[in-house]
Length: 353
Image (cartoon, rainbow, N blue to C red):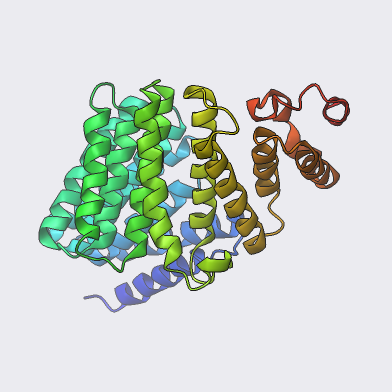
């Protein structure tokens, strides 16, 4: 090995790791990643088949692609995939490289979805799933691989022209199968709930039978309740170890259940199942506010809950509070069907002017 290679490689690696610091500005992160790519490229001149350099060069390119805001991300993802493929040719059994390769395919697929390129995304999801199946075959205890494979299956299910139900069902089965072997892993349970939510969202768009959607949302709610109830502060909704995402997602699922029961299932606001769903939504959004008090989205959703439940005065106070901080947050309120019951009120008309 040429003596310069490890210097350039470690230099590139340090730049890459520095770029991952969450607090960095996007411009500084991009600059560090570009510099790391330059160092890896220089290192490759001394050993064109070095799989460590190739894998980490791919990682830097992939991070650049994920942070790109336009279609240049596609070229960066393609360059990253090329590095992982070259690394695999050098050492076919390198599991770390295979994991990074599969993750890059998944992230590229997600980006293509954002760019409204479903055909390209389908191909990328399918290739990512193939790689993740290889990974779990070689490393059956890799929980991250099971999670990402399930996310790929669900992502593919959301856009597949004719196989969505089977793909969503497999995504849930993959996670539940692994979770049964790792009962203490609440992250896996959270992912089961998240896939159920995605499944329900897809079913709503496709106008599937509302009772089926309700059962899927209830499954999400039940699984995530298991996660929340393991938190020592759960009895008072002062969550200590549970992530904010789990609390908010449980609130979102509760609100989705209330909307479904009121609108698609045509139940009244006094129906016990509607009352329970609205009560849970209110409870969990309030808990989320305790964890992140400055997020106005929680106030907005609480206002939705109150308007749906006939608590007009509280909905009014919440919307006025939002308006006093950032009126832009209310730009969609006039078209939001959750506010149908208050849309004719003088205070609402005045607020929307």
